[in-house]
Length: 576
Image 1 (cartoon, rainbow, N blue to C red):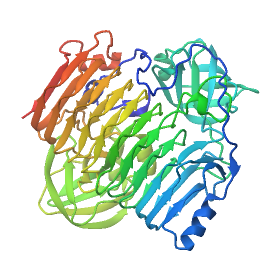
Image 2 (image 1 turned 180 degrees about the vertical axis):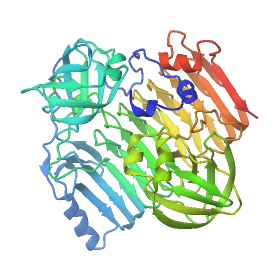
Image 3 (image 1 turned 135 degrees about the vertical axis):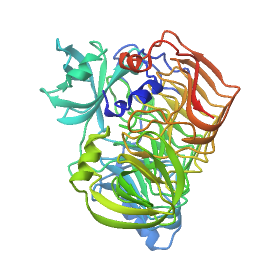
Image 4 (image 1 turned 90 degrees about the vertical axis):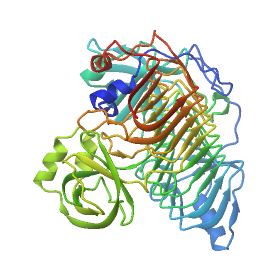
């Protein structure tokens, strides 16, 4: 089971995941389904020709151009320093790429954007050749189900030794086979066109794949070195991505960190339609991105996602969050804090505070921040006692700071602090189509935002989830949130969940979320509870249509935590 699912026991129940396979999408734009491994013959596309994209843009910037039009065509680009294109320090620039396709030749980042303001990227299509994944048919399963033998399908690259996510698809529907994504699985070559997938006994216990199913496996090809994400934007303001399409990519699709006021208009993450593929293949592509489609972290003003599309990625469709930092002690107004990675709290910021037992304290102002020293033995013992992703223990939480607030607080070790000014408040997710992914549809931890008029179909986990997470130290609290006129159907978890859980597994009391409106949403064909709302002070819940599917049952470990009795279409707990 993927570590994200090892959450405190009440949250495990709250997310209410389910296991049945999903029906084919009815959305008109969905890729056609296939009932056999018939070859895919694409329409003729113009050949991709080598193009010095970086040099082309740099020359025009040096000449003073601020509206740069890329030549149409399919441009084969070789990365420099692990980036196919780098845009840095630009102000008031438009790059118009309508009719242009960037074909990345290594499985490393397509575009890096850093310290830019009012930059617009318009009309670009991005794909990879070779693809960052391969597809292989399962031909044998070991008796203990820990070993899968696979044959690579025509048109996909050979299996290379790698570790990462493996998804299992039903070739009759081209959809995920239930919840069968195996994280930290090992893939190894086993001769020309063959390979093996090795997974843990725990993963094998929940295996439901069949001989003939198709495994989609991460496949790195980066002789010059690899860095993650297709489009990565950092420390930039008022970016605009307009009509940008990602057909494949490494890790996340669109990822921004520390940005301010980004807009995404009609951007698309989806698997490439067979008729538009650049190569003949033994079966259509089954994955788009290897992980999240759209991800925003630590935004000062939250992003606006409008009329965007996100399908068939290997994780969440939309995620908006900040960073929690780990409190190991408090004395009066002073906290001893271990930074998650880099310290992104700022003097003058408003701090949100979450006690280890799930209580949310009143917000405070940050008056001072002082770097102290590397984490000591006592700090490390507090970290070791928590349920969190192992990567955070190994590659974070290693530097201590003193954070002084404007009033005394009492926080036990294992509590969390974040900046309310760097969690993406003010975001919008509006009129978007998404789903058929192995995780959540819309995962939000920010406030003063709107989730409106979206359509979620076939998300394996919760359709819309609003929740801080101890496991990933992802912040914060969604105050003044509107969730309205969304449609969630054919899902494997609740349609809408607003849940807060402490580090000890306790359900937060009312007041973790403040000022929440959930209305005029339609939820159908999901397991109970379809609507799960907890820990809210000031809830408006009205005119929601909820219809759960009794044939969709909770996973056994969730039934153990939540119980079989008391599940209903709606569950509201700790509400004032």
